[in-house]
Length: 82
Image 1 (cartoon, helix red, strand yellow):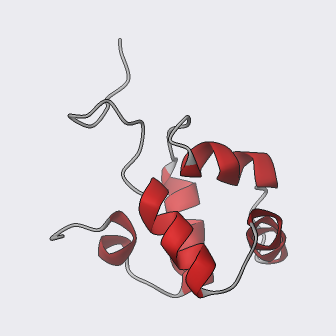
Image 2 (cartoon, helix red, strand yellow; image 1 turned 180 degrees about the vertical axis):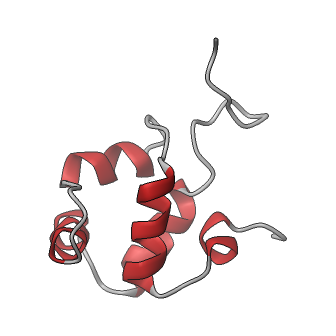
């Protein structure tokens, strides 16, 4: 069974929003990975790179991790309504 994609063929909805949030918080990809690991999530820089370049699907646990680290809602992360 093929994995779902956006209408434009992207693998996730958060790539651009993740870049924006990371820059707003003045974090490098490695810095974000470190912050996620300190919060108990096993994500490295390569995972963040692949999500930001839309080469990777995002799991529900990863969505949860990003909302917790950035202290935002799922809606704000996904960008629904924009």
